Length: 400
Image (cartoon, rainbow, N blue to C red; front, side, top):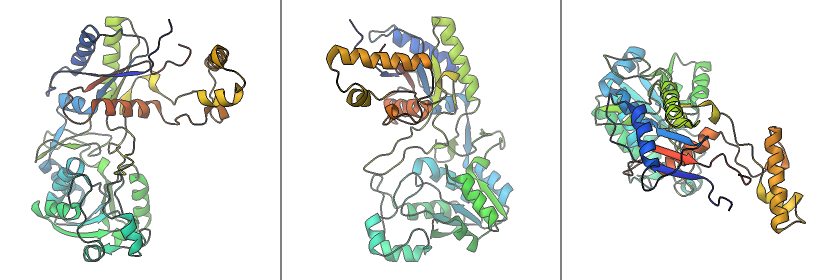
């Protein structure tokens, strides 16, 4: 009988991970124990084992305090008024970083993008913005003008007025604060020429524009905490990007040495099972909520490290296109065999299908972004207790 199940994504429960734990051993032991349990499964070649970045960073003890952040910011900016540009609106992701930044400054000019931040958290209702005749591409709003036009807007999910909240964080850390709203990076240069660009995926463009238009000092979040401060954790590639709140005084940084972890887990699985299991570390998935308009990807990348077999994008045929076009005159077993043959020929040629009509409608995204999103949705962000995801059948197709 043909196998009737395709891709399966399993959340694997693991112990609570602490600093200093041998995470690779825990991951391998957890997967193998799950495979032999009442819900067991067979380990196969090209299965995918994904580990959330949070437990990697925790096992590494990759943490920094607000005082560490303050020291790094103070070293870079001195007593300058600092423009904090385009931060995302997040209590978990940015507020604790802002506390450290503010602790290292005398005054901050906080420039927020509108109507939403980079990942889709809205400050302003789009219809209200149109109604008030505000042009987000050109208009720079003071806090007073923002309140006059839009009042006190609270986030649809969190119920937080982020303008007021971020002001309180800055003042609570001992800095003066002025808030403006604009989308053109150059707007901040009317207030200060020392800027900390806090956007994630557009940061290099922001930095380029600022330096080309007279900024004297420009750093991005990936340039803060790139080295240890007084024995703290650090991330030499991403700095504060990808960090999360740990306590009221500490952030958990994005993990380091990720490729070493991935390669070790891969080798341990190969040694113990004889199977070539692909391994990746994942953070936020890359997907957008259609209701709240929030784009999930607040990490700098979905996957900071993965085995070579996960490089690239899917190379797939669209079954419904074949059924409706190439084989429109076939049905039943004849149609099934024709589609199988087309897939076999595609696999045998191993040629890229980019640009061919038979691929239209397939997902043109990197494998690690697709698998990371699947893993993130499977593990969730709460109390499921499954920081390890085991995916089977992802590389199967209709012929397998």
